[in-house]
Amino acid sequence: MKRKGLYFLIALALGGVGAVHAQDNTAAAPASDTAATTSTGNYDGRWYIAPTIGGYYNDTDRNTNSRQFYYGLGVGRFIAPNASIDLFVDRTKRTRDTAVGGGKWSNNNVGVAARFYAGEWNAWRPYLLAGLMGSHHQNLGDHGWAPAAELGGGVSKTITDSSDVRVEAGYRYDWDNKSQPAKSGYGDWFLGFSIVSRFGEPAAAPQPAAAPPPAPANDCSTKDSDHDGVNDCEDKCPNTPAGTIVGPDGCPQKVVIDLRGVNFKFDYPKKGHVAASEIGKALAEPSSDSIAILDQAVDTLQRYPQVHVTVAGYTDSVGTDAYNQSLSERRAKIVYDYLTSHGIDASRLEGPIGHGKADPIDSNDTDSGRARNRRTELQVQQ
Figure 1 (cartoon, one colour):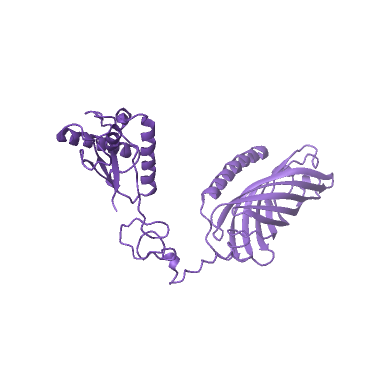
Figure 2 (cartoon, rainbow, N blue to C red):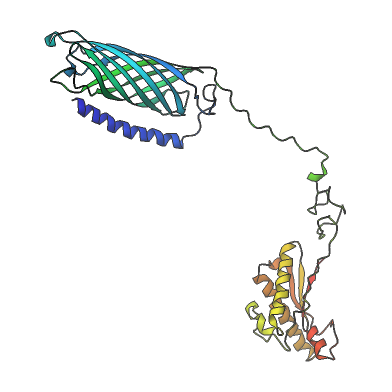
């Protein structure tokens, strides 16, 4: 009877303690209250004393009267919102049955008990109890110490900011093997009532951090009157028209994207060579120099996301006007595709358009001049 009851309670307590810990890890913070907002912010961590009075229903193997009172005192504190630790002492006296010689049988217990609570701080909180102790026995035949343990449960309620009440019941097993020659180990059921009284004044709830003072209504650093992205304190050119490209000082800034050096072979790109991946076939050697210039143009467009450009292509004067028009459009298209394939959104690009042999930048009477005229331009729209 005794050991089976103890093993059952051990299994029950292990499962229940795990459930309480799971709830503690997932539950929201307890509601704000005078008892709940103290030194730790969400539970009262002050030390307390807990006078206790209760009764035993004794193991029949003790050969004593079946019931009697016990009294004790605990000292402890909460170590987490849902867990407390108590050090305790308690005492009881038992009257031995006449059949075994009568007399008194007393127990003094000294131990530690942990309680694991569920629910919010100020509600009725059910809890599980587990404890270990040393039990000192004194009777006509023997006196000495033996280990003991207890398991149980109860319910607690905060009644003021410094006091709680606790009612608990459980099973206490005593490994006493000396008090009776023919008996070894006793399991007793118990019921107890405690008043928990915390020491000192509860700590004040932490004050929320003060909000920064609002910026003065006339603070120029918070204003951008012309909506150019530069605050009024640093804007040296106020009232710039909408869409104007400005520098860090708020003044108009001309963005130049120079593609001089991006030259094409004579009569290139051919029809069908308009994919960005084939641009190397159309560029004059060394083509790596032209690619480096195109990559600089991509970088400039990425640093100035408000800039829009027109992609225009040109040829030299060799060939018919109709053929040169088509060739200039292919040159513009292959550069247009190169920019979009490197992350420049098409909405920022006008074209591609071709101008044929119009607007030469050098003489068409020399090889070097004609080579410079076979070009594309990125014309910034101001």
